[in-house]
Amino acid sequence: MGMSVTISAATERDAEHILKLQYLCYQSEAELYGDYAIEPLTQSLDDLRTEIGQGHALVARLGDEVIASVRARAGDDGTARISKLIVHPRMQRHGLGGRLLDAIERELAATPAARRFQLFTGHRSEGELRLYRSRGYVPVATEEVGPRLTVVTLVKESPATAYTTSA
Image (cartoon, rainbow, N blue to C red; front, side, top):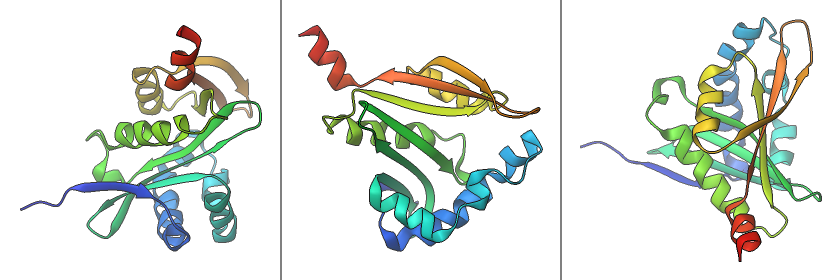
């Protein structure tokens, strides 16, 4: 009998597990762009704990193991910035990233300050770009941040906003 994956709010106790998973998951991004000094690989445990405490964070668990995570923070400008959507490599391509993205969007949509969602990824990260586009995100900007990396910013209106504007 198999275990099912559960998604719940991350707590400070999850921080160390999230950081280890983040380090594992971002190795492929670092290799893709030839840059092992990217922020997810250099973030400290204290910074991660602060990030969890100041925003929204979810984890997906298989039994007791944290196998995926996502974080977000609603800004004063009405934009909720979603970041660090990670899924353990052995659990990828099973829809878990999409489930986690949907879950953080639902949580953020309940926040009146979140009128739109924003996220970003590198221009070569085809899997991530495909996932975001399939969930209704639209590229709105690109920024060259180095000789090997162009960051693509994608945006999606919050369903709560779409309902309000159509009513």
